[in-house]
Image 1: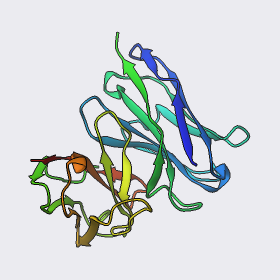
Image 2: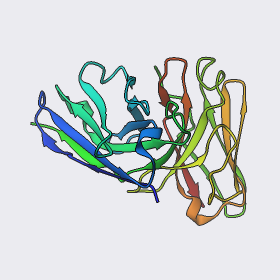
Image 3: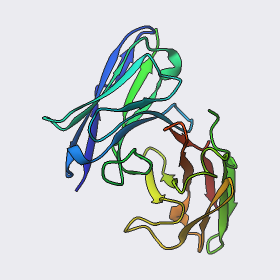
Image 4: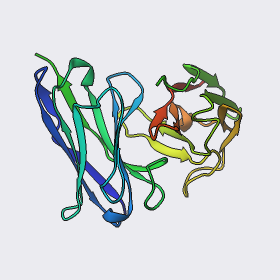
Length: 122
Length: 110
């Protein structure tokens, strides 16, 4: 059974940093692209960042480009999201999700974690 | 890039059918067969119910179906049940190597 478990959320001041992690199990980590999706309180889903199976290529939404960095730890099967220069509008539940098909960009998100809440406030 | 356009809300009675539309552009919905639909119950993570326009993951009821015409994709739920009450989001892969979501549609089962 595929499992994704996010951690690292919390309260941070504007301009601060936070590192999210997503521990994975139940699938061959090196074969699937992964992504982060967020959801502001009471709002819709917003794609944030994606990383290919190899980890060589990453993609970011314009709203986080230059501030967030997605990465993957193959040895420990963990997905990370380094978030710097945080703003109030980054407040959201952050979900990690796994691609459906082998090796490709995550066009279909077949498995999701339960999310971790990030609150940016002074 | 703007979100895909979905109606904010739809409603239907048990047993009826409803359709939710998802309108994008020629650079996303119109260009690729990578439209997905996600169901989200309150306080829960989203769950894919349709992928690649019309395919259902195993375990998803065949009451859910998807289609696409031009720049607009659609999700149809037939034989509405109380448990179908949830938020529904479409998504599409884009020519910019991003994933674009719709604004979401709240389904109310009357």
